[in-house]
Length: 375
Ligand SMILES: [Zn+2]
Image (cartoon, rainbow, N blue to C red; front, side, top):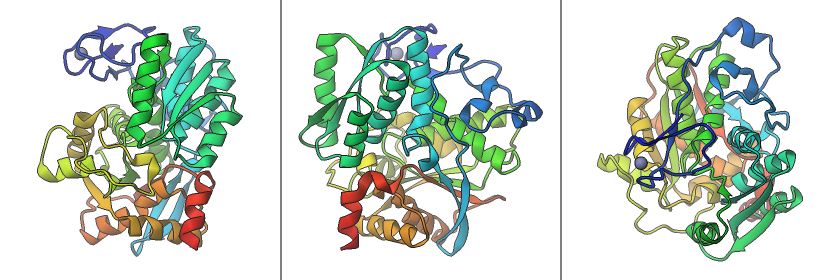
């Protein structure tokens, strides 16, 4: 069920390893016999769990009532683009898709304690689902993370450990604790079942478009779980004969921390750590060294997609533009505003269907940062 793409080691269902025990690389997960019985699906409650033939089966899934998130038209770059409005999920970010599947798995195994490191949103999301499942969670975050996200973690009853310095130091602190404690690392960066949950975003987009693929999907990318989830989801729809091509997957990074953009521009097959990361408004994607760099590049190439980097000024402008269009988006999500403009200006959208832009998190999570942009 779990497989290492580097050394081909396999782990059975029930394993709690977050990485390959042989070569320490990230693991993949694959389900056999994925299917999309459209007539049956149409009779079910909206939301990610309606795709039951394409998800791991749990006797008691851990759910907080995940909504079928809307696709809302909005004018970006002079064209109508559909916003995939993920703030409609229970904790206000797309991470709930991954947390729902990962925590359902851990709960099914009887796990009672876990740890996670996060720039904020994944920690808040896992904290909510862990609370629902009765799992004790400890979350390591940068002390500089948005107060709203840190507050959510505490509100849901998780133990918050604030780590001074840039994002990688929170991971380093977690690694130290992990070595001593031996508890399960419920990592949204490493665990393949997190991506397994995020892939349901692709299923929803396809179903909302009448079981067709859009021309392109534009998304913020740091660790890249949206990119990998969408790639896996659309690839499964393609393999099942539901759609006839993959949409172009377009990764948008903050120029201040843009290792994937740099690797794609150079034509590399692996992502090297960002040479000189700088502070960015887009805290949720300020990750200088993504865990699954090779897979991120492969997803861009396989889908005919691309990578775009946007400036801090463009991110700030994106927050304001979205606000005036009626959408409160966090700065991390606002990268897609300029990302779509660059994409359309380059004339790179091929194929029929709309352009979809993923709004990953709600603006109310980042109130102090947005307040500064309005002054
Ligand atoms: Zn391996």
